[in-house]
Amino acid sequence: MPSFPAARRKAKGTVVTVRTDSPLPGAGWRYLVLQAARWCAVSSLFMAPINKPGTNVALGLCILFSLVGTDVLRRWKASWRHPVVRGALVWWAVLFLSALHTWAVTSRLPLGGSFVWACWYPLALGSVLDDDRWRNRALIAFAAAMGLTLLLSFGLACGWIPQRPQVLAQPFTRGTVFKEYTQQGLATLIFGSMALAAATCARSRGARWGLSLAATLAVVNVCFVLESRTTYLTLLPVAAYWAWRLLFRNWSVVKGALATGGLGLVVAAALWFTPLVRDRLVLSVDHEIVTYEQQHAATSSGIRLELWRRTLPMIASAPLFGHGLHQWEPIYRRSIANLPNRQAFMMGHPHQEMLLILAEQGFAGLLVYLLLLGALARYVSRLDAPQRDIYACALVVYLVAGMANCLWADFTHRHVFILLLSCIPLVTRERSFSKALDGLPDARKNLRPRDGDMRHVPELGAG
Image (cartoon, rainbow, N blue to C red; front, side, top):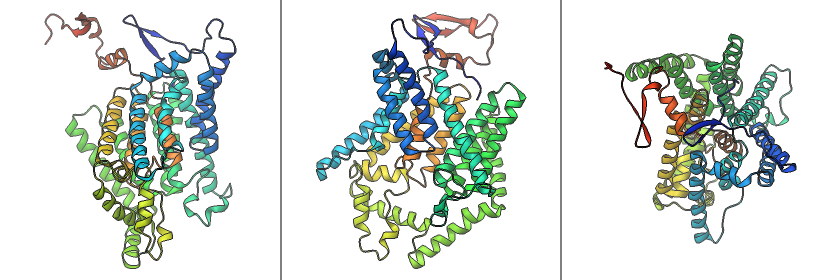
């Protein structure tokens, strides 16, 4: 990964670089505790795609050490000012109110686990990953974990490493190292996007080629080793984003859209004539749906159709605020109580992110969810490269994969996404303004103060 711009903070109208690894006078052991908290935060990014207990331990130690370390109030207040932190806490408030709704109906308050409390992780990690160097170390830790996973996955595919014992009973673990194929596949797509984003900013030719090779290997692993259909579907919009980013970004909107769409059709056609991908995406889905309709068999596609069919009446019965947090599962279980093969259809969520929100938080919750995602997309668009490309692809992965899965309900998906969000740099007014002037070498000298703000004064004879 290339070195990214240093963190900056506004002080009396100027921009200064803030270094956070120099101890304050008299800090002593509390400064060492703060450093330990930072390394625990970095470790949590490494463990998120690999191991659940390790992720929980790293996060717990990070929060504890952050509260004990130096300058606690300043660091947590600074973290609170981050728009992404506030957005995560808004979603926590929605989930908390939904839990109170459940408590009012069932006398049970479902606030255990990280489903709700993971929304506080950006605030906690932001208190220790408080400059670009520490945030970059956390991203590099995630990339290192996924790079190791990628190499091991190829070793499994080539027979150099024995497959895991549960492969016979659970085919979706074939070629995977620590997780199942959708969990590893989506994380691999994010890793590939990180590598390609870093390649676009690398200064040396060797680094560019090496990072591009890593991105290519990630795509090969997703297509020919893991074979997750959710990941296949997610790969297409990610590829479309990179086609626009690398090939058509400087074109007009219409030309860029047409060229990207045309390239997308070429890629889709190439995938169609790839037997492995075509069998997984088209032929097997059609066969599974027919088998479900004729025999009510619990195929992968059939289970999703059953889940979605049973979820729609739930939404219709409580459209505004839903049924409350964690109420989808008990209602669904009651609805399939008379099915002869109901055990095969037992699931903990409807395998569709927005359907789950509609069933539990209603249209009010979905509206907040969409507004937050829109605000996040707008914020990501203001970042500098390569962070802008990394987080744009992560957001695309989350949105598209959420059409066929409930990512927030899964520990690995939830933690990978929220911990990556915890590493988003703060876009200050100066950084955003500097980005707006990028590519205008003579514009900076034409700025004049006006009513405490800045305005552009054209040169004599201009335009």
